[in-house]
Image 1: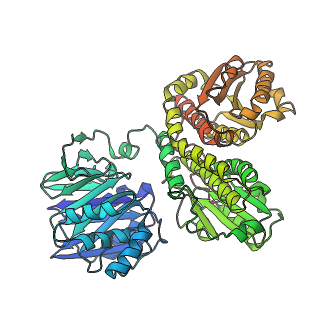
Image 2: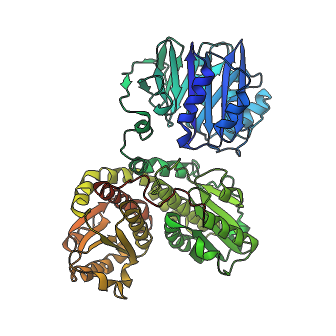
Length: 609
């Protein structure tokens, strides 16, 4: 997501901040900016697009300062633009703020600032509220003003703040958004991630939640929420910049697997209000619109298509509307039955997938309402859609998608729940049950991640296999397809997924002694059926790895190995069952010596036909 860099010292802050922002480009962004304190004034420069736009604009200005803050922004409130880019300032431009995260009550605060303090806002962002809020409380002590402002704010944030009236001080705050402090000689730094600092320092403070940091060039002081000073051990960075970006993980894929609890939490909480009602901010579908839809089309490619397979199941179940799902590359070359009563859902991590974009345009030409599920703000799919449902997975670097898939699933559940409640075909008690189950998912995924060692040991027994079959029923079919794709794209094993009930219609002819079959049996309503399918492949000599809820121990009698997931509703299991399949694929590929983050012949964003 966004990146923050701040510096106070004797060197040129401008050069150091720009260099640090470049080290954070991997996080993804759509604009960048910098604020410098010089000669009692703040100088702010910010531009939409790449950091090079910022560099080019300031290259001839000969900017020099000993203190400043910089930012790369991934748009949340307000489209990517020069005006919405960070840093943001107060009215008289004496205070500048950079911010990662979201201020949940910014509308309330904004109305208060306008009504009681005659504040005029320039941007559409929640961040500008912070700058004005600090200004309202400023009485000569920046730290005090920041504390008072934070007391008014709800949400998740990492802040960097400078004030032209205190040109030797930088104040930073962390709540649920990463922040580190770099300790130098005659200089100190803040950043949202370690890679931004490694060129200059190896001594780091890892800032904890609800802590405030005050930096001058010779001193760093940490305070807790009660303004009491906090002592912190120095963290000594021993890895290189590339490893730091991976936060100590061997591969980005593994890092991103472990980031899924956070991504799911972010995707959920940004769409649920305090009453657990779904807030489709920025999506303008009315009750009349939803009731008019007589068909939903979900169109996507690869992993996003597999998310759509689950989406079809849950939307039909909760919203009581027929759903068709199609591969984008096929949809665009036929004459689908789409009109102005069709809701067309385009799913793409990058928002630049050419086939999906072409399918979207075809559906739009036929009059369909376009709702896209994408991870990249301002992407082509997002720009050409009527409505956009952003996932909050953060930038996904590994080619094999993991956290984008699970956050896409969350979007599918939220869309289904919203449509079901809006149409009054989903009872409120059932709605509340689903929301409660979804909110428990991040913690349950953490339980599965704790099984990584056991899954690694399983991988050591299986990694020499050259043919694997995945089977399942109901929503497990979509997860089987995704598990199979993860395995084949990074390990190069010939992997195949099929609905378990279809085994007898040809595929079972390929099952022979020691053929590996991974059987998903997470659906209580279909559990006995799946046990029968497992018995069928076992009778032909298959080696079966079963995957089931932790209370269904009967599967141990039919399988050679078993992976368990925590108990949950049948309909919610896809968010859990895919996790061990991702981990298994990762370790099998690693044991086979494959280039996991960059598998052969594959690209992260497929922008050619």
